[in-house]
Length: 456
Image (cartoon, rainbow, N blue to C red):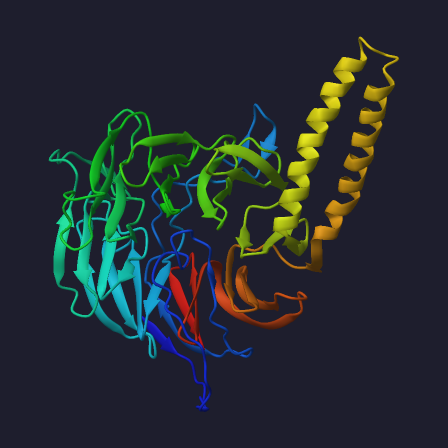
């Protein structure tokens, strides 16, 4: 259902740098960041309204944990609360968990161009590459279709077992594809997985043929895992969320395991250009909202941010919510300072241990004092990495276009100047704005009501 806003549009002949939004959260690192700079004042052009809100794969967490005494537990598997979109040129695409289909909308009017049906829910938007769309379904298949005609080009599932189970009033495969399909270097990557006591399958197929044949292609069996949530990729690694277990790392060329990310969990993950993985906590028992930062290459914990569960990262800064404030953090400097401080604290502890047996060793005393002074200086410098802080309701979705930070909230979407935090624009939306996409002069906002709002 489409509602067209009564807005008069005046067309100016401006040179606007525009970009597509070809995959979930823009790129394979799931950054949510594009170079496209939208105009400051946006008007609602149309709204797509699904008759039924999204049917999430998993229900939310319990209201409270009596054993731990914690309330407001975090969801570890909330990867499909809205119809997230991708967009190329004048087309907008999304997958539906309601009618088991991929939809294509006219980006100018919101009217439906075509629908492609699968046999079960489609939980992530399709990835658009060279006129083709790639996506997975709860029916256990990964698909490739033509982006203009919706003609099926190939479908693939990694096993012959056709067992199904009931879910949300429909049947799904015991091996649904709930990772989306990531396309990189002429390969399409995805997983078929749900139950840890059944084998799971991590696949890399030729993106033209859909077959696991050729250099860099594989189909590997995984045991004791639940591969779900959008895949992420660096140059040589795949990162696979699990939800209520730690994210896993695989060699991208072979599918061989590289281990897991410690102290991490959930399906909300993003990967920085330095291969630092930002993700949720390892369980629901944390008393505060938490995001953790790990070195993805070494698979070691780096930082913990408390009081937040959403973050956006570009080359230099991280934007996050803590308390009642939205904050810009010079993350590169902050990580470097914290890393040095952590090393010095370990050095100081080692010197203190030596001093227990050598209390009169002046050299050790001097080293201990100098190390302490440096630690104090670093501690004083850390707050200076926070460049601005403004009052703001808790964000549910983030995106960045050029120098503008877009924040989705409950019933609202806002725009802030990323340099100084000054609020530039806001508009009402129906529901919680989980999904934000910026493409070709438009801001597309997806909510948990099943609505897609287009501002331009």
